Image (cartoon, rainbow, N blue to C red; front, side):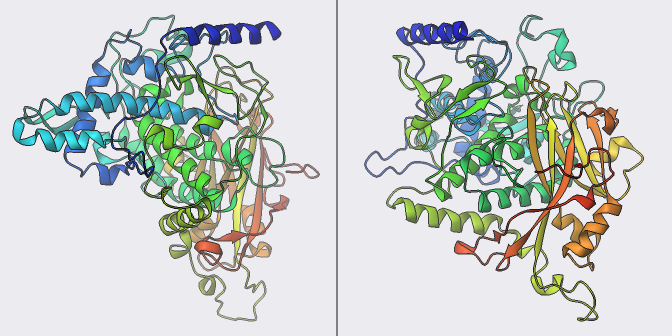
Length: 582
């Protein structure tokens, strides 16, 4: 272990002597005096932007066309995340995995310079392309190029993939006029197909596909319709889990990743857990569902722009909490499994200058160095307290589910107000899941149902009785002891299935004991007997809504402490045993 650390230090020092790629983000559109900078826009808005959208599509097309051996090619940049397990920009490493950090305290911060590098390359292509438009259009396109930033897919509000992403062809206004081109958002075609060394056959079918795929058929064709059905079936759970996480979790460590184990209490959700859900529901046997290959799918970048946005929103709301020292069980290309990472750990392989200075979580805490922000995080001309309040208000306006959930009066309305179980307290219920990440040595879903498990497994991920699907993203470096934590909101499913039932624990827990079921399925749709998922622990938790929904500070909903309801899962395979704590 000591030798490996010495090796890494020497490698990093050697890299610093080279002419490193400086990841700075886009250079234009920033007011250096005020700090004002362009927004990354939500995709549905951005696609209507005309010249900016044209440039984005054409720049992505050009990016993907670059020779795969070039350091700044789409293939090489996508490969930073995972395969091929080779050094990028001179940053060597001894471990057979990618640079990406997962189940790690560095998960949110590492992906920030990664996104900035991608955005920086696209931006530079946009400057070149804008100069080739006819004279009458050139100034308009050059202005759009200057402020161009990558869009994000807000899967909290719009769970299904945006329409332009689902089509093999797309129409753009190019320098030669309006034309249909192969859609660079639909997939990436390898040219040439990577060798068996870079994409080994032991990885299965994922190593053989000529292009990236989403929810592939048996013949290897993308099935975006089925992927969208899965996303739609999980939409309410994704929405409510994201809202509850950001509205309530003020501690960075449990907020940041699925691997944090110390002091979680009943809060099993995390930003990485939400991120994993989208990867799995989009990929489901395709590239997004496999960490070593995910960076090649163009939707990866729309997805991770939103992950970074949610991170930036959370940071603005809770500016005093950030990276703490935690062990990373999985490790990376440069970091040993089990090594402690902290705010000063290098975010390899990203350099802040050509001299080879590596970014750390400390140096990427803000989006300012990278020349972008988001509509909810306007951080110029205000202090930290004002920014926190403004961001809370913007976040709450977008996502507070109080307007779409039954009101307190409806929840407690009874034909007979003196009937048993009458209770004026509102409750929020969730399913907590704890499981070894390598329980099956491959990625898998745990589908939760309010009612019997449907007889046809191919329909499980979008069945009418589905509550939501918990995804477990497996990584080849994961050990059998590495636990991952997830949480699925229950309240909407309870209300949808039982609209007139009381929601206090005395009614809900017996109902769940009778009707809550789960089933396991891997990403090739094979059913796995639940008993084979060693170490799986499932239990229901609940907490009171304090003061009513949307009635806390800045309109946020506030919650009380968690209570375990063991009876809801007692006697079921994988249910939390009596006597075992959270």
